[in-house]
Image (cartoon, rainbow, N blue to C red; front, side):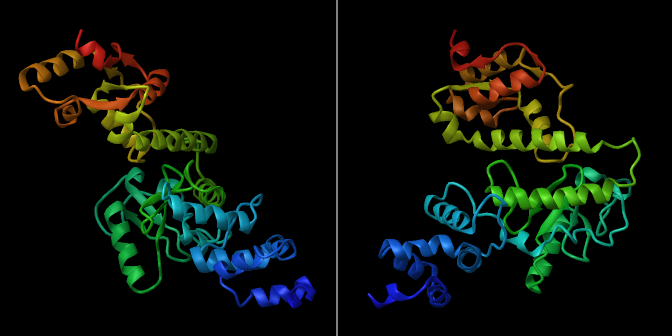
Length: 324
């Protein structure tokens, strides 16, 4: 074939005119052309990541070819979302550049009367830095998106995490692609150092912030996995827990409280009597108990984690203990 007589430099110039699908089909023709996939990593695959997935960043230990096929697998399997492409528009080198406030100055939303750092977000689009509550963060994104400015990324100071209002998700979590984790880590670290650079000992230390962030991300992943379908199909089984305590825990994992409820007991002592009473008088299905006060169903996997890290009063309540 005549094309095999061309050197790789010329072939790469031809590839510039191909789509990702055409390029993959070409590289499957023979061993010589397959090497184009390896040679073209820094140029062609980066362009494909941008064209097909709008992503221009990767992890230092990750090639753009690896990133492309990982994104491709996500679109096929639908088991998780793609890396946030709005991170592309935010560079960690300029985040909060010129922002004069420190952590202790983050007191009130600029658009309403909502107060408290646990309720506030900072828009990290360059030279914007609006300090707003959750409701006005959504409003801010809608207005700027309409004007094609795309102010989607917000930094939550008490959590040191990023939230994307267009992806509607926390960015850089444990389940995210490592490219997103790396980029989010760079941005949040820059924000932490900027906001806490002049802080006194009255606030959390940087090590405390990082430790709580790691705990929160793991526990949020644990909580989100506990869907009704997973609980019912989990071979480890399920159990019952106080919904009032779960509400306190969810306030932490979603960032509305800075510290976990380690001093609040999971009180199971009155829960067994309450559950048995509801089942006897109503004759309802076990999975309908979530609609009643102070009862929630969780997987045994979640219970094992909670019982190791939080205070418990009483014993684990399973389906078997109800029918005894």
